[in-house]
Length: 263
Image (cartoon, rainbow, N blue to C red; front, top):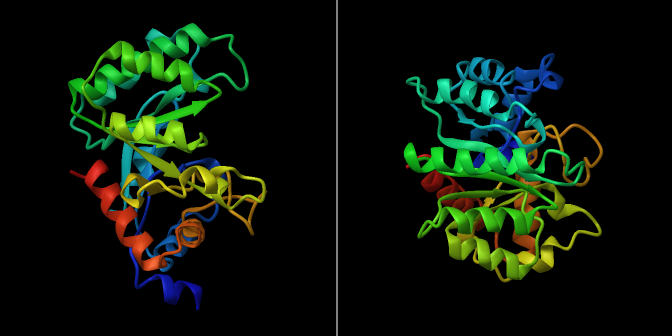
């Protein structure tokens, strides 16, 4: 019944790693569940050199998939320049990548590769300008570092999504003023999450939905494998926080996502 209800609405999952091996045994069923729940577009962010081909192979199976190209900060090695050259070779081909992502800085696990991460992030931000593509930015314990790099690049405005936003209301406004939309996922549903307070007053037009599958599944699936079919759960929580209808959330977030990623 749930799928029959949601299928009358249109949702977009702006960030999902459905090419991950964890979906290898039931990928087609996972996709069908997403469609049954109204998810019409699923954007696949790349993470490293090895994930490009599996991602492209999955994207070729269904028109609902769209791809991004990028080097995830935790994938950055001491040979960052070589890694970037591999990705750039794909970007230069006539592929229809919709964004540069997933890129950013992550200092949660280790700051050992901080310099290489910053270099890779700034270089990929330059790609976004050169190829006129939006970005999907990953931040973990590195908000100030990312802002420093963005200010260093000195653009009048940016276009893209601040993936898995986890900051406060002030940081949200900072990013919106720079041109970013906030990617909101399963964390919004967590019991002790501060996200509801942070985004309550943020205009809905500045928010997009995402799952980050297979990670960060929303309640009541927390701790299990996440998938794009759970987007309506996140949308309903957002509707509850803002005291609006689920249909309003579906409409606004879908329009924002498509205008950002499918111009």
